[in-house]
Image (cartoon, rainbow, N blue to C red; front, side):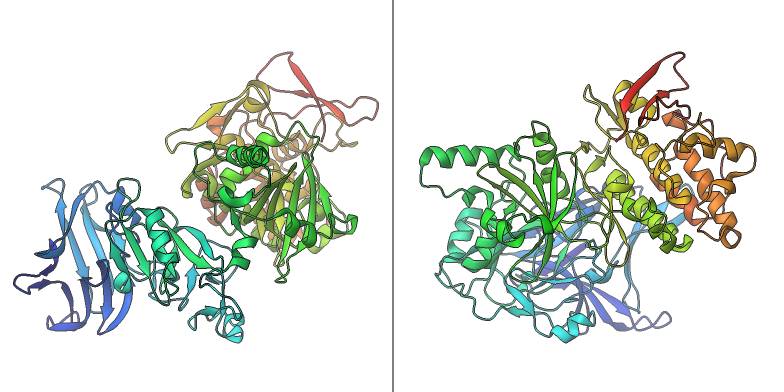
Length: 635
């Protein structure tokens, strides 16, 4: 199938809907290739645009990332003096596929599932709110993955046109340049927005002769230029798209997307300077020293333009790291609350200067979490590397960490079963995103109650990615000689052999699930059952049919007994000794949301322990290894 314009004859090929399911006359919806600016496909109702693909970037249409991985079609695109068109060709001529534009405006592509002899929709337009054209108005970005409850955010240097509308979750009015800012030859520059569908390209200027740096330079030479990006990314980045007015219909994509460079004034640029310009020291030797430290953060150069805060901004925000601003202390440093000059609250994780540990974890956390966006992951805003300081700047979450509530007898009484179940689901979804749904596959390796933060609505957010490891999509496990983590949450294969996988995270989730239900730490010593930790106690009571006996007394068990028992069984499935027996996070979420029959768990690992003279150190017996114990300090 071919869509597009033949410039020689004027023939324009496009799809039109029927008037109704019974009337094949031309309806009001159309799907066609727009040839203005940088060509892109769009779905419209009359003259109103409903959805667009974004421009062609040499690999595919930016807003349709599945084009890059399709195995059904060969997609070709032409933009010459004779024609602007695209053509879908089936790779396998025996495959059946069709496109339907319904009378209701629903655009879908189908292919035949030969096993079930059914047509399966493999693509549809407007799959989430941000697919709707202009959802957040002008000069904004639409992002359904922020977890903030509202998908619209103004671009750097802009503010909502109507604060009242935005407070009511209506972003259609868009954003306007912040009053008093100057982006015309006053030291301005660019802020990068990564992984987005660029603005409506029908008004963009195209210059195929420039590379990205030339594109930026040309944009800065014209005070009316507002943003730019590469026109073709198939060879690493060539050509130039630039916009000279308001920016419409930008959205963050779950995968794929392009880097968009938005012009900002010197003040905004100073608050979020890019790594390569951060260290403006007087001495050349000092500049090189600090530049090399910044470069260590991403040896592959993938985050070479990660935005940084000046040390002076962080010092001012935290009142010079005042004791009254201290939120807590972790293994590698202290966390402070901060307040930026624009009123935004932040949390600053400051690496201890004298810590030989933590440098690798710091590098790891920056390079991983900066690329992740999900409702149930804490959001990294920026970082600071200056002088001897290394700091991470996060969104501030007012309800602290989950252990602050669940292990406090008074505070955990505020957590009803329904709220605990919502927290369980949120944590599970965050882990599933790490394991399967993000552009990366990440094993966290340190999931525990203190690494689950709670926002103002008690929505859980996974934090602390210092121990995390990045996997390839086809990689399922790894190994290390440096076993790091927290007693009570570590799977047996990781603690004993240094083997980690998505199933080691599943083990930690299972421990956390049982802690949420009982309100007790897994590593706590039980006087009524001195041979067992929490996992052992739950396993013993479950086998006796008395699992509800260990449920937090503050919960009304009678109202939710079946659901609580089901969650206990899921927790025990997660902590089974053999990693292969444990379910995946996708299966866990299915089990949590359905009433299907659950398999019976096998005996967990790490169920036996003894206590030495009342001290908090334990011998952990792994059932699969006869007469072998390891000892570690409880943390």
